[in-house]
Image 1 (cartoon, rainbow, N blue to C red):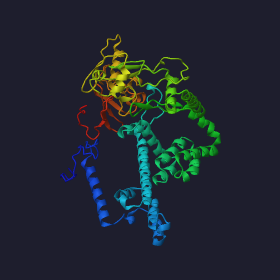
Image 2: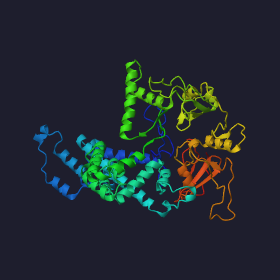
Image 3: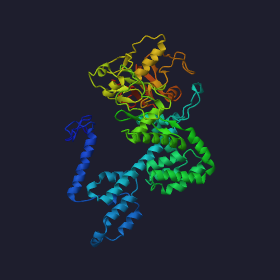
Image 4: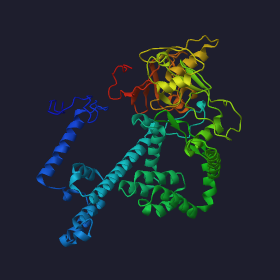
Length: 557
């Protein structure tokens, strides 16, 4: 049904699945009628252009007047010269006009209305570049809106020292945007940081981004390298590298910035190196497709080269001894051997713990187990799988703690020969109802129950495993200073305990965020701006926002 309340031919009901073009199967993504209508209208307009024999309206392109006048003065192309000119004079004029087009709403609309079939390939190249400039223009505005949000008083809470020193990231603007935009907190904070830099120290970079002279990746590189430096140094380096930044690759621009920093502020090089070394770290596993995960490693350059050299030498030696694995596989397996030794023990829930993690586990790389055979402390992993899947009665996915869903075949392999722990679960929702063990200390059993139930931190989008998170009462257990005398206090129970990560624990305590557990394992967050989100961690349920509908009932999870 259209916006006018009437049904029109070709409308697809919102939420319906249009037929796919391949395999005759339903399309995996639902499309609303508005998208279908816009697509049909655009295709009809393009068909009309082709039928009428007309081309793009070049006079509607937002081009500086001097550029347009200059090309109007150029004589028409000489047909006799076409054999010697691959592009042609008319296409050359179109290329020049598109190259000079100013990014913004008008250019985006022009590109949206143009029929690509009406453009020669040389002009299509410039159309792609013009679309990229529009993207840069839009990103500049997104970043500046994020900076404006960060300037709001609600984004700078008063952090109580009773819970420890104020966090390094005092502003909660990134936390606010991360939930709303369904992105990581790191990406949201980076967006805020960009916007602040474009408004303050790196205004020229912000202007170049808004005009499309540099793309978001290059502008972000300059922010990452320069935003925290003294403004005198930052602007001096910016002046040197920015004029050519749009024509340099990211690797070249990185080198340009490094060279300019050494020339502009040679005395500060040691301080920058010390600060960079202090930030060395190993990232936590990041889920990748098909049961794989990636980890990042940030080390001083000489240490990284040493690690690389050891892995390459051992891999090459194993290859020379006849190992059939590729060098990349040997390097990966070698790193595993250096850190964890033998394949790790797998501790499963309604599955198993195993010192043999399955037949697909790669063997050790010769010479890369300096600590001797056997598992290292801390290498236990947890896998939750239903009993029916474990018994090969169905193939429902299992859950690998700290990773996410894994195939049933992988879960059964991990469970082989391991130690099992019984959990009673709800077959429909998978929610843990009973840990099923008797403990002398109930708080320990309760903590395990909550962590197994929620699996991850309770903030929408935070994937920190619950076993690495803190435990907190969603309704305060103790009265806080300033609370009214009749304030209702919470209990230590499954429906009032949750596992937030350290940052989200601070947000709930001092950062202006409110957390309510309206049913065991079902949470509602209210942010400082009043946005409301409902979530059920440890499941694949989509985060629900009730900001626009404050009277909505809790979603039927």
